[in-house]
Length: 287
Length: 300
Picture 1 (spheres, rainbow over the protein chains, first blue to last red):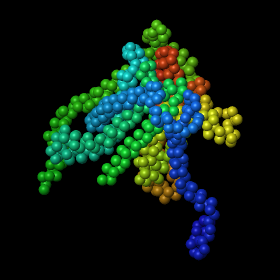
Picture 2 (picture 1 turned 120 degrees about the vertical axis):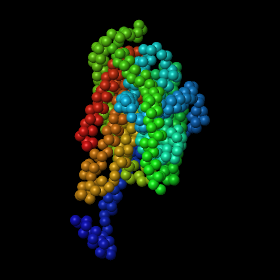
Picture 3 (picture 1 turned 90 degrees about the vertical axis):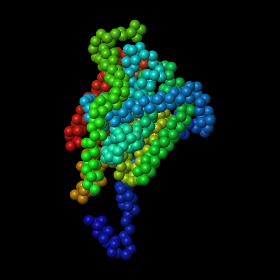
Picture 4 (picture 1 turned 45 degrees about the vertical axis):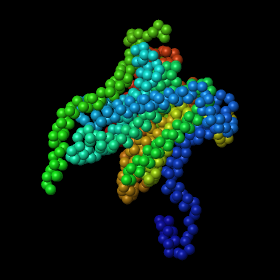
């Protein structure tokens, strides 16, 4: 009531009544509270990234890279100087690409079956897709290891690949399914009306429309595979070392600063790719 | 003029779709075959193997054989109940903390970001593009004894002169909270983004203040995201062993650490398997109960 009167009188009287600065600040703060909080949360999320990037330029005194000693670029010019690290990265890339290709293929086929067809066992299929995502990684990793031990399978490249394809399938299905469900069926009907046969319709209409979903699924699958540690740890054996396995081992023996170089590169490359895909999607939407 | 529309309406039931239906009878099964076979052979079968392994007896040198030894479960529980309970405690605290961090963030992106929504979403996920282990090592640096955070906390008096953060439950929960944040933020955003802002305006028009409007309109409507996000955070947090390894001490060991070391270091497969089975079972019960409750009481 009082503020309303004050506001009215300030409109009438020529020299406006000066509001206390605190009140304006308080109102501004209240309006922007969520945004400020979000900005702080984002800052918090980036805090470890700053540390990773900063310590990739550190010149550590001992075997560990926890305290700042001085600036150097030698970690960047000599990335592969750490024995075993670059071959671990190469192995992770190889497994990432192979598991992404197979999981994307399998998952996309399942997504098409679930969205486009009514068949016996559909509910059970959905359940089987959901369960791996609700399974803690230790359980999934240890159950696979139990199988491999009981079957006397020797652990290595193949067992890691098998595991990575397995945990990626569900994520691909979910991602592609979402895209397929959002598709307007009339677009395909229109193509059929214009005498396109089933294959032509699929090739020219359905696939291009679903493609962003498949691409997103593939990117997700690759990043999940490249970064997986817990499941890999159970199924890698002692000879096959992926990059996360290398970091795990290094954490007990001494951490070379080059690990931070790889971490920084991963972050930068993934960020550029994702931003490119996002902005391309936005441009397509505007057209 | 009249022929064209009829043709358009008639075509979905025309000859083309008859062919499609005939051939389509077995098509879904062919589409499912490779993926489902993979899931059955490498997910369902291993779960059964895990169950049978948990009932074996023997020793690492002479091998194990199935003897239906249910006592493995009670032995495992007697020895490791502390770690099991601790896993659920830490995961629950981390989940609530992640919700408190992520909800306002997702809310701001959904309602205040305008055309920058997509770019901000990328930024929210971006920190998690670096390796999980490298990220956790970065937290080890941040929380280290001569790091900035510990120094400030000592100066302010929240930590004693020799107080530390590493090797404490606080550091482990901090790591768990941080590492699974995108799994919380993205589902929250997805459900918040679907809310029509006019519903909130309507509540305000009906004399709800902004808190009441949030509590009665926005929060209930974002429930699917809250349920999804909390589950996606809680499950990996409860099974994690990396955060304890890097940020904690043996006194903070979680069930993941035990399963990992029993399996890979001690080769004590039966006990490790029984712990895995128990973890899986508890998580599944939790998921079902949680979805039911949220589904019947909140989602309506």
